[in-house]
Image (cartoon, rainbow, N blue to C red; front, side):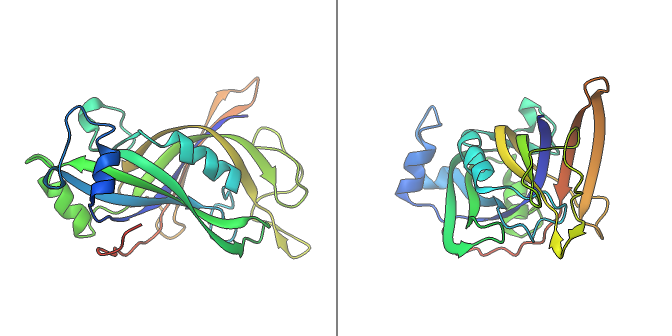
Length: 233
């Protein structure tokens, strides 16, 4: 059963070089130069079980799906899909893997997206706020297609799943509802601090068709991030 998901990602800066400009110019009508653009990176997600406060971590397979679907997607404000609301575009994504294994037995990985903005008088304040660490929470929206219980391995979602419940302990093991696939990525948004800062999570569930028990969920996780203004991905 498909389900819409959005998670708060981490945002940082990028250094401009000729390689980055060449990749950006694949998306532009006219070639841009270093003076024309402002770049930043988003650490979209990882596949660590323990660090997902909603107990719905992504698997490596889901990260690989998002890696493909996020390229070329736009960046907006507050998930408001308006053309006037577009502020940036994702021009490249990649997985940063390590030799370390997650507690789920997969290679530990982070999905990173690179974004560019065209410098204008209109967005000068926004660029200053990003550089100064004011605008740093971004929410990534995507459609999840498959889920797996970390205890018994059965597929499932809110509409159908085994008897195990995420966040509960079974024989000393915490149950996670792992997101195993994504069929699309919609956009990335700058967002404000979620309304439940203590829990770090805001949710809204809406029944689309009660007879077929289709549920749409939008999940937002708030994480703190400190800029590293000199780091290249």
